[in-house]
Length: 178
Figure 1 (spheres, rainbow, N blue to C red):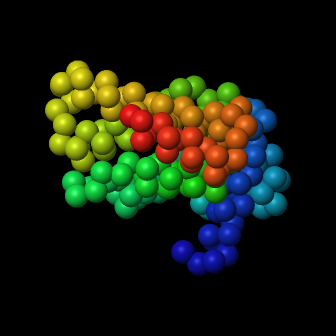
Figure 2 (figure 1 turned 135 degrees about the vertical axis):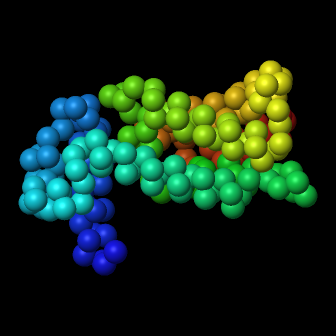
């Protein structure tokens, strides 16, 4: 993809994310999104079929990035430090608050956050080679991942007012005690 196309897609994405802070997705029009992104309507349709295609692409991209973070930082058998994964998640959320506000904002149903939580739970169960039918394993992983995703949701939405470094310190303390 050339730089101009990438820049246009980024402008569309940012305009969409800004608009989702103000209203539900079904109330966003291509016209207002195009105006916000400073592009023509035709340019939008060059890249996306409709608002829901754009939404889907943002979700796919975010999940791909989170999966990469998981793969790069989740503790392998020889290392048992879950904190690296959590630090990477907090840093990524901090750098991409608009995307995570979209994932967890008040206008969305719980579909996105549930999808994200489910993917992370599945990845942990697979990585740890845990039997997901074992209720103790499932509850432990669900508890851990749900806790982290809910803390990040509250933080990215501005409901949890704490600086990034302090949040990392608090999560480190919780992980160490757990």
